[in-house]
Image 1 (tube, rainbow, N blue to C red):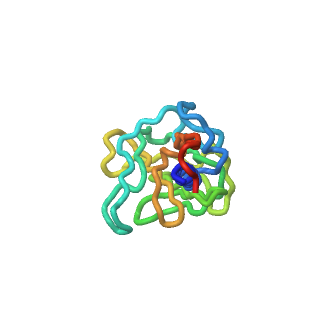
Image 2 (cartoon, rainbow, N blue to C red; image 1 turned 90 degrees about the vertical axis):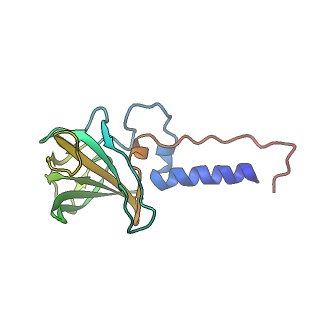
Length: 175
């Protein structure tokens, strides 16, 4: 019973973040996968990590901040459709809906795309602007991931969790 439960839990975690094909991606793969890539291209430089809030309206950091250069191209992390490209609370934001129901968000971005436009993984969606609060370098991209109203750590898209199933113990009854 316990091995089955562990397998279901592990597979559920992978399904929340990525389609089943990405869950099979080996750990230690280059940054990015067949389905996902870094939104600034190249190596990641995280200046502030994901810190989910304790409640829906609580304090937290609902994404990651990635060090970049003003004017650098911002890339769609995965294939999808642009849901929104414009201002939210005075900040320029791009939001992309992916086939698996996941949404990724990017800010501050001067968009080069419009709502309803299809984008491929790694295609430019705009350019990085300076001015992200708390950024310790010239410009930072705040990159978020959501499923429904639940914020997820977008870095897990690039490094899916490794699922390990243990063999059933023939001495322990299963059921």
